[in-house]
Length: 410
Ligand code: PMP
Image (tube, rainbow, N blue to C red; front, top):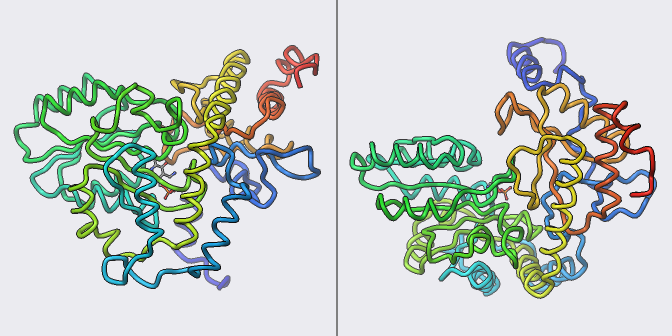
């Protein structure tokens, strides 16, 4: 395999370089060994403290969830052997969907094997030629790709720019049969939120549908973690479709869609990613049900996540870091002016025990590379102080001496 330096190899080398890897060769701060990552570490030798995982409520190691998964394997095995529509479903499938519906406050939900695939299939399925999709230009790649699949006209509006969205609706609405507006509940790269009441108002005024991807907002926003509607004091009856993933606050994997009964019934018989794909494994159904139960009872988790996020944001701000428009709930970026600085900072953090991968080029504007921090309910203040101190040391050693002459805060 190594004798010919093929065109493809040359191409791949160029693309890697463009992605910024040439700066640090292969000594890069990605693909950290997960077995060594802990967000609840207690000074164990070579473990890394992770700010890279969206285990927002600190449940990834929870013994009750492990136990629920193990019992499900013992009782039902590891797979379900077919699409639920034609191969049949287990009671745990519908039980999970009812629990998810009750948690987020919708009539019903439908659960699928991938969060990414849920957006891809749903957006691709909802609309077709002659329709229009209005999508926030920071929306997740799965939404963008789903829009392309649909063959509808796609119009991106600048992130959270309500005036521009309204102009587009005013100018174009009458040219299309159906219009779907797609936004996220909490944006995964910036940690900011949409102006939901205004989106609802525009949706109503221009007779559109509103879909919210709540991948990062469920379990995080609102007093009890019900998501962006709770954050704004609204309920789900204001939203046409909500999409979530089970890979974030619920610490497993898979996606789900929530909405009115007839809409979910229609999707259950027609949505390609559901109809033509295998049903969820019993382990996922059981572990997510257990996570939902824990989150509903242990409300301190959402509160602790909020406290940690605010603490991090206040400290970062005081140290002069740029956190952009983050509202300090779960996701907080620290924005750099060059990809190289972000990459080098991430590598420096990794060397002293903190895993925070840089986000450069992919998913963020090229001029706003960043370290994206996921906070969680298990982080300690000492870990937050520690990573910020290490970041100051990596980016500005002179400033470090001024700020951290005393270690009393650690
Ligand atoms: N939507 C958003 C906003 C996401 O950030 C992600 C992935 N992080 C997904 C959907 C896809 O979810 P999953 O990783 O569970 O497939």
